[in-house]
Length: 197
Image (cartoon, rainbow, N blue to C red; front, top):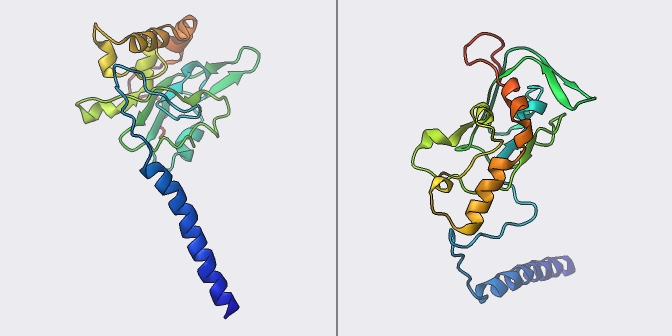
C-alpha cells in the first residue's frame, strides 16, 4: 500500500511541475515580431540553412551517410585529398553537392562526422519561395556564383529593411578572397566519373 501511495504522489507531483511551466507561459504577454521590418532574434545555437566550404570538401560522403533522411547528394570526378599545410583540397572536382530542404530536418548530424569541417549549420533562416523544385539547393551552383549559402529570395528586392540589406551585403562579401578556389573545386556537369550518393 505505501508503494502504491508513493506512485500516486509522484504522478501528481510530476503533473504539477509540468503545469507550473505551462501556466507561466499561458499568462505571459504575447509579443508579435514585426518581421520583415524588424530582424527576428535567433538563439545562439540556432541551426539554419547550411554553409558549405567547397574548397575544403574531400567528398568523402560522411555527411550523406550520417543524414537520417538521405537528403544530401554528393558526386565527384575523382578522389580528393586534403593538403594539411594549406588546408585546401587537391585532386578531383565536385560535380554535385545538393541538399533537399523539403526533407532536411536541420538536425546538424551532417556537420559532426565531417573530417575537414567544411559544412556547418548557418544563421540563414528564411528561404521561402513559390517553387518546390527550388528547395533542393545545388551548392556547386552557389559556388560558381561565389556564395556559400542560400540567400532569401526576397533579399533580391531593391528596397529592403536596413538589417536585411546588411545581411545580404555580408553574405555577398563573405569569403570573397576564396572565390577562385571555389571555382577550381567545381567539376564538369557531364556524367563521366564516379556517381555517388
